[in-house]
Length: 427
Image (cartoon, rainbow, N blue to C red; front, side, top):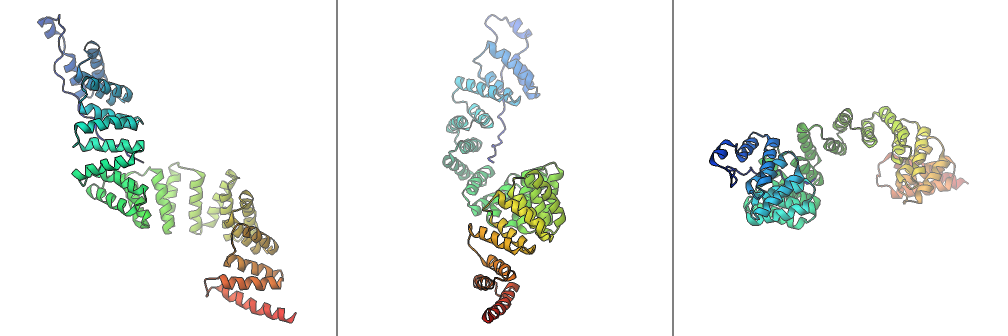
């Protein structure tokens, strides 16, 4: 996500004394409190509502007072009244078209309000007035990025780096572009530079983790996410990402720790529970995993993946008939679900129903080519059904397709082939 450049709104105008009306006497002026001085004091005391009320009252009588108009915009912004602040800054610019602070502040507010194209117009004018101002260029680059002009935004980030090669905001902006382009090494280098300058620049850590993941440096990616989560433990999206990386690393205990944390914190979705159940299965906690998938299947009857996962786990629990029931439903929901067809054929074979296993293998063959595993399963089933010629044919196909010459299946296939060929010769 593109981060809004966090530039603080510039300080308010230092207001001089109010100008007395033409009819006011010296005595009346001395007796009457100065509204601009009072507004200035209210701003300095962070009494923004009072400051705004004083400025509104004053501007009703003196609408062309530039400092009061700017400070009113400033006060609106501090009260969260962004649209009124933007309008007041535009009014200040009508009084002084070269007021850099008004262009910058209004541009930042427009980005915040989701109007980056309008923001870019004002920020471009700010840069014309002060091309050396890094903050204005960074805000302009942010607005351009959000409005889709990434080429110009990149040039702005590079312009900032030409003056200050270590500017972290510019490095972050260019790193994001590199990540989008899959330029993992370039992105990682920039993000490493940012974190070297400031290890507490938290938003850089998930970005660097993404770059490290792209470089297949998964353990380092996990470390970056752990460092981020140490500071922001409630970021559910990053915690889920960490869990996925640990699963890829085969560090299932670490993955389960993150999944358990998410569930305990109330982040509970069916997909998250499924990921946790798959982690339990990877830890050989089959009964727990089965219980989760039974709940998920009941909750989402039309989810083929959940039926498939339940079937796989039931196979590992040596319950082939129950496995076949779940896998049949997965195939019914997705007729081209090749992995489910593979497992269903295996479930039928383990349940002793070789005829159904062969039927499922025929269904599978309509969607994808045969391989060594399917040839072996066909051979076994034909062998048990006493289909001598078909068994010989499929054992031979298995041996030709197999890439593991020392596997137990190879020895079994060769032994059966010798026996079956002798039986065929005696026919």
